[in-house]
Amino acid sequence: MASAMTGSSPFTHMSAHNDILNANPGTLTEKQSLVAEVKFRCKGMVLSKHYGDAEILYGKAIEVLESGDYSNEEREVKNKELSILYSNRSLTRSMIHRYSDAVSDANKAIECDKNYSKGYWRLGSAYAGWEKYQDAIEAYTQGISILTNSSDEKAWHKEIEKCRSKAKAKPQEPIAPVRRPVTSSNSISKPVTSNTKSSKTTHKDEEDSNIFTKSDAVRGYKIVDGKKTSYFHNEQTEEVKKLIGDIAPKRISTTPVPLVTNNGAKSESTSAWNKAGTWEEKDHTKYAQELLMDALSKVQYTISESDALAIHKDIVGGVTAKVSNVKNIDGHASIATVRGKRRYVYEFSLTIEFKIVLAMDLDEVVTGSFKYPEIDGTTCENGGDDLDFIDFKIKDCDGPHYRKLCDVIVRKGGLSDEIKKCICDWSSTWHSEI
Image (cartoon, rainbow, N blue to C red; front, side, top):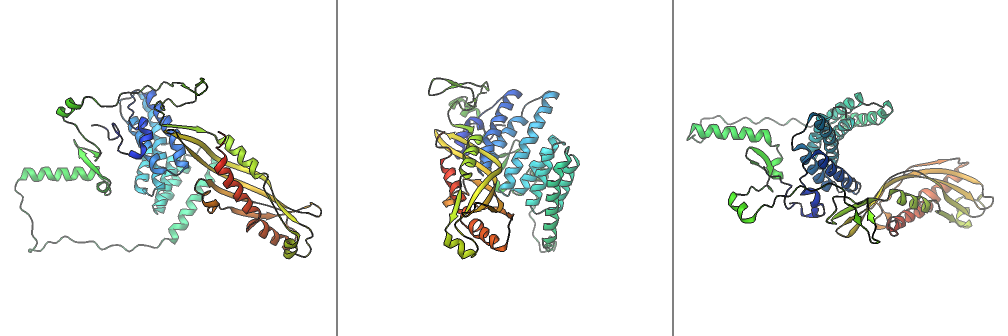
């Protein structure tokens, strides 16, 4: 059966990835090279929330790995790769609320590698999103039983408690009445003209019910030679093949080929899959992090003496709130080049520590911290309207008037507004010198 992914891609918006979608590697080494490229590209897609595109590429990698014959040693390598791919695709399907498919992928990840704990995590997440909380609890519990590091259990138990709380809060749905088939003498039934035809039709219906899920008909699957495939599938007749010739994609070489840069040097870091120049992505995380931390470390906000006195009469002179430290920064930044156009992919989280200083003696009177859980292209749009912080904490606070000062000058504006501007400026300029 011809693959639905070969030839011209039916996903026209994915044309930049046709080198992957049209590939037909033969050996395990070639297939591993394709899988590595898929993981690389999908990482940026997931970070930029293009879950549907990542699902398509993961599907191609799964299709490639599942085809062909393998030795026992190769089969073990293949299964471990498949476990990761199914787990990753389960995540993308959960994020677009296709929980049934996400559960299926998570189960396949576990089948491929029963010791892969992330498969159970994905299974629990998919069930939880589907609001099947008891199933989610069972999945998380199974995953805990195979964890090799007991320090990781805390996160798993936290998810279990969430599921228990949601299960208690979830209202019980009424049981729908069962409809009985009409059996009266007035009911009309069509005569069967042929026993052979009836038997054949019944067999086909049973076969279809085993292959299709309830939603498959809506999503556009059909049966070809007894196997399920999509409606993009097209079998050519021998006459058509003679007219148009052999258009099947040829096996591509996965040997890395250095590309020549503008100054004539060869670049060893360029993907072997990018010979057509359709897609290239490079990691710039360290550079972007350093720029962000450096910019934030200089942020401060000072209010006037009159504003300070309005807060409390004992405050003399101006008051300044400063960023004292940026810590726990985590995330990713990369630049993808798609047909000559650049895309900037980034997502970070970090914690800000601040201090408030009085102008009269420069004594530190209040310290505290807060966290930005998500800094990305969506939160930095529209002047950072969606750029929110959490876990606001105050310490070293001597007196209620200083707590009020902290609330006014940091939490509700002032320093937090300056930090927001700083992050938005960084988001639009970190890549300008690259």
